Length: 463
Image (cartoon, rainbow, N blue to C red):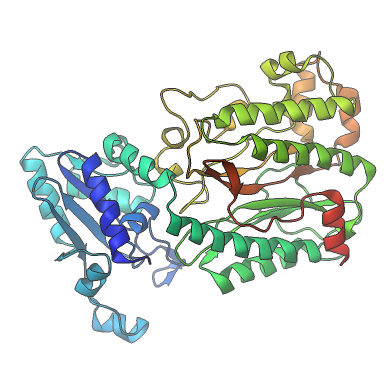
């Protein structure tokens, strides 16, 4: 938790953006894993953490704009809580850490909101992504659950997005800490990348590192020889000579900030010529994208340039053919990279996507492209100083997708389908770094870069 002055300042800024009504921020509750009392590790709502800083369950925050008063609502620890969980701070003590003077029982939430509604006041709340909070809002607002989801406050949502997208100095320190752990996780994965080692053993070792230095992993670890499956959480494989291990993983710092790196490593640290060629295409797309990212540039244009590099690189390998601009307009590169180049990152690994992916990543100036591949870009708008993003180009050979395009003759004039058949056992390669936009361009969030070139990775595995 940061100093209370930081949370007070954040709430003061928020107050200036929401002109009237009542602001309600719901914290998360416990979630049972398989029976009541055996819970998943608690994870606080990120916007609640951003403005309040408290990571205990079953809390709510009310900001009354008209009365210029704010309240923390919750319940005092019971004797049972003390017996099972130890001494816990009182609600007033927790509120003081966040710089909030007024506390109320959680049961008063319905009364405050009900009185506001009777007075025809707007109740601003965020779109709920957990059923518990959806049910709470349904009860206190007197709306059906689907109406609650549809009735979130756009004004509050946009105000929070504007604030959270620009990372402060203290946030960048947290992101660096998460990056430091993420770096260590990936170095261990590279060193373990030898034939006969199980994917599960590597993933488990990495996740243990994340827990030992922070809260947990920032997202379920993606680690597999079947890298053509973009989010492959199956760790049942045993590493084999000649295969590639794609590892996409990151850590969450003690204050909830995330890291997100990807490297693709040849088992036993020996790339084939074919693997080197594809890896170098992806590496060029990564490096050129980082060089291009700077204030005033739309990330949508950086994504398109990555598609250009991928097309031209594959054309050099005689897997595609034709004019670059025509191919980009036709969406040829999406066959090999169906996902976007990157996403915003912060308190969430996909920052604020619970508030609305399009609201976070696009605006009135930059609209989402609805073409296959292009539409998967989560963040496309103009870059600003303080934005933190991932850069994650990839090249994948997905047999089912290739066969579909071949059967339907999609972009057949550009794609040498007969040669792609030789790559059905290839898998995929993705490389990913985290950057922060600066006045001069951008820099790595964590100063040490993971080995990215073929020779660097080979040395790391062998050493």
